[in-house]
Length: 355
Image (cartoon, rainbow, N blue to C red; front, side):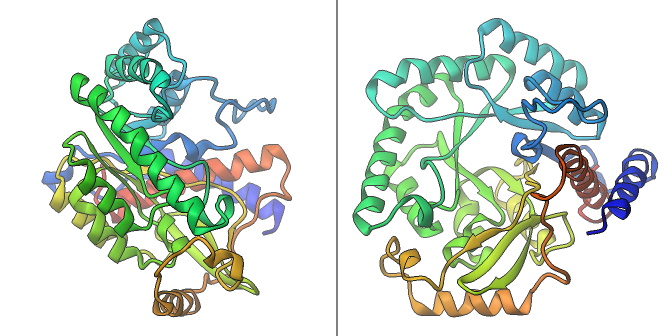
């Protein structure tokens, strides 16, 4: 990308996204606005970069204020280490601005962690969160595990953590939404939910993550929507590379996901579900599915899933090389991050019937 052209485009879009009229959505969805996942602002969240144009967000209140300015309906953000007083300030701010709040929380790893988990649930609920997104692993399955035994141990520990969390969720009537976070394949996550048998534990459906596990994105949606509490709405770009393929979040409408169909299925199963934008601006992720090490953590995945995925990558190759940002200055990374988010909001209003 030409740096001068990029900065010019950024400035133009930043103004246009705040002033251009958008198409009026149907009455049924006229009050719905897309929210923002804190990870969309991976560069700006608690940033130490001295930027006058893109100052860092030091806490949830600053994130909420900015997201309101760009037209978001709510935020999904971390609730770790909140005090009761700060939770009340978050509630006051989001109520004043008319925004929803969802939390992001870690589940207790052992019994001694339950008290801290419960306090975080209490503080999040005080701030107005009824849904808390979580993940049950520390990273991507094919990067952090190296054997079937390690994956089995992960699943066992995850179930133990969720079983510790469930009584707290039930007591406080707050829902926990497990993300398909490049760890569980969809069928595995469904099996875990069926074992738990709790109305308080469901899914944060990420539209694109499971491609990295050789899963068809629409099949993942169809399997997980019956359990849906929240979503990470995103579009995905793909590109071949020698060890497999590259996978990247791209602005809505520029990837190959059928966003309208996915959104319709989500609303069909949960009419009140929120759609939280997770537009992570970063270099593409390498999915090394042609290396033996990748397959060491998958048991029983048929070869046809690999063939189908590689065919999908070839058929949907991004029209130009996937965007890279690691070579940009810190200021330019902040700029392209904001540009991408504003572009997603413009598309959501023009094409996806959000307010």
